[in-house]
Length: 108
Image 1 (cartoon, rainbow, N blue to C red):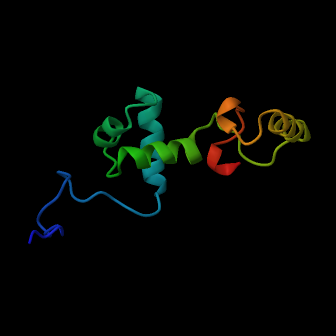
Image 2: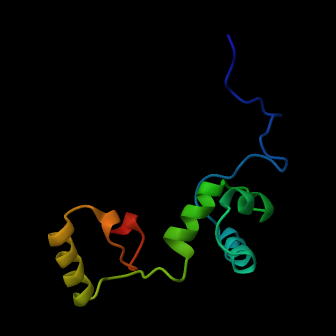
């Protein structure tokens, strides 16, 4: 029967295992710097070439949910709350029908 556990000497990454857990300030700065130089997208290549030992998905989620300066964070204004209520009364829970430049979907 084949074993699915990795041996300590095997690695999917040349520099070692992928890092898990909380992001450090240094990692955030590295991600911000890389995106400011090369732009968003192609997250798997970004993860490989930026020097981060994270997956492309992890880099993408970190950028979209925490670091992207274009994403508004904090409380909604009364006007934004009214707009959401109006759109919800018209479209229901079909969030994909309308787009609000407010915050990531995970925070609504």
